[in-house]
Length: 514
Ligand code: HXC
View 1 (cartoon, rainbow, N blue to C red):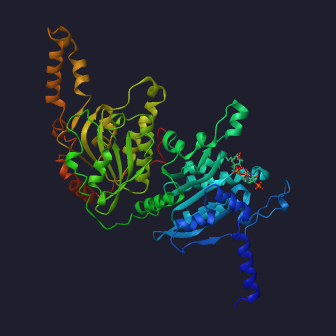
View 2: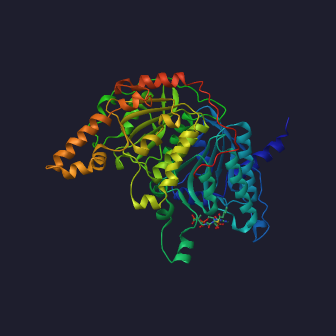
View 3: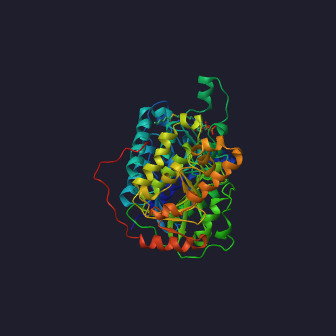
């Protein structure tokens, strides 16, 4: 039995470390509207499940007077616990201790828990709140970041990696979140940038606030670096819990099946999509009309909103949805939406999550801006990601499927397992007006009444091509279905695809158009 004296000493040591950077620093943290590192962990994890390690780690800095400083836990809290009963590894940087700056021992604590999560094949959650590389430790802190980035890359596609930005995440530190699967940000609290306002002022003479440069809204709406935006830390933790309920613990485990409930009757699938091809609608209503309980967790909701991606369940099993959004830019594919869905498709494929693609788009966005921004290279990511994916891949063409958009959105030609189309679907090289203007240009110009002739040719084109039956006749579409049959058809198709097994040519890895 441990002696009472030794137990007391342990208790005292623990108490000291648990004070973090001390009362004053904690007050400063609270004044910024932030929880402390341990409070965050307690709020996120299942009650009483957290086990902390390396509490007594000490820093090794010996310059700039650091040798006299005590940095409790070296500014980072690490451990294991569970969320919704699922085991996880976690680290949370403690801003109250030297601004959560990353020195060599701080980095070693993080890499140790990262190694643990990879070995144990369980998700890793990193809460970032730090001034970046600890300046006094020089190259040792840079080395620490390098070790983290290497592990992020090694674990990519093996275990889920989640980054939560709850304070500054400055300089090279941003690259760990950027290498992970999902980045969560909170309004007014998260700040991410490579070069901060001070550097920008010195080098460029421009004044900008941290919020304008790299606040939560900037990364959710402009850069696409963040996947989930929350108003508060509590909302952010709920979002993480929801996400973990959809994804598996690792790439070698199936997602658990959750109890099934029918979609909410308020999403009446037959009435969501207008017959008029030019009328917009919200494709998320179509998604909610087929998912269990009409639940849908959207990813990157405010960035590249012309495509919708996210998770839902069908018959209790997680599905990754990719859907053109007709109410934003008519649902076109462009540089950002291609990046957005290409990466998501690869995520789902890596973690064995079947894909359901809902198609309604006029094609790729035309224009000099897009061409010069590299729409060829970025657009190719969609083709690559769908072609490469070996998970069950099901497509439903709701309305328009024109041109390259038809091919890119998980067509049969990229090896969709099942392609369904609603009766209003149009599969064609382009829309009827554009097509008639090109192929009947001479007849229209020579006619006594060009407008009448144009309309006649448009009608002819619609009659001939603007339907799903030409593609169905060639077997490119497997079945033309009524909208109300969609959920049951999806349940069936997903059910028969459970043991899907296909090979790919032997290779080290492909070379996707990054
Ligand atoms: C050492 C640091 C630190 C750092 C903050 N602190 N950042 N100590 N190294 N990088 C310390 C402060 O000295 C202070 O200590 C305490 O943390 C709290 O910091 P404050 O500045 O008082 O807090 P606040 O006003 O909230 O400002 C937060 C901040 C600011 C915006 C993050 O501290 C800041 O700009 N820090 C430097 C950011 C940066 O440029 N980092 C290096 C990036 S380069 P005391 O003792 O006074 O409480 C990089 C390279 C990595 O990271 C490359 C990898 C490839």
